[in-house]
Length: 294
Image 1 (cartoon, helix red, strand yellow):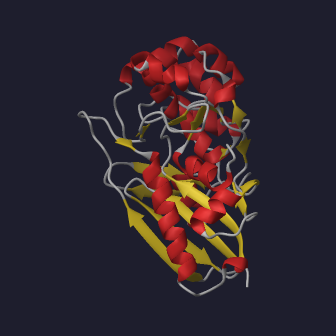
Image 2 (image 1 turned 90 degrees about the horizontal axis):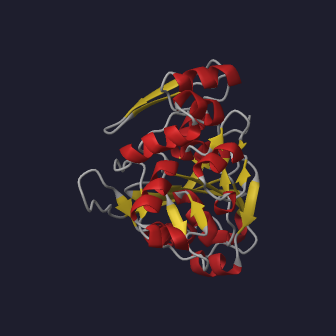
């Protein structure tokens, strides 16, 4: 039997499931955790909660008895997008992560647009306007308001990529999730060194960026001991929750589309050409790289 594990790092909880080669669900588990709202419009979370929930749910899925750990051939990750996980030189979390729904960064969005040379110039570089939920404004906020914390930052990760780091010991992300940082050249699927230079953000703070199906690392001895997943199990890039959901709905070809309405947001996913991507962004629409890797 060949089993694949999927782990989704959500805002209110983490879900893990195991599927076989035909996509049949063999086992699943979930674990909830709280959000912190220190001030109106603020939303934060301790990344350790994600890791604890990942360990708990992986152990539960493996203990279900539907397969053996040796049957596990790979792990995929998805999760809430845009959150800022800041690590120091030891790989330790510096402060709680600012989440996708945190709204404190309006001034930082204006600052980013100004440093980029205006809204049109920003869109040309990263195919996105500056929105308060994105990661780059959060980095600016920490730099502006918590300089002592900013001076300690040696790595910036997204939520699911922190779990990847704890599983594998590897710093990595992938293009669909990185699209929501406001630092990725979405059209060319790579970090925008030009924008990073304008914003005075060291590129070394950002992890290597993979395509969603690419292997980004393998489960380390430490990760294996914590979770029970065999050492050496491949972990692929995965995807942000919305791009991954689009793939699950079969939105994998140009011209196909889905719409999603939720309690806090609505979203649309339509694979487009490069020119269409820039046009959409210039109209104020957030754009993403597709999770399938094309």
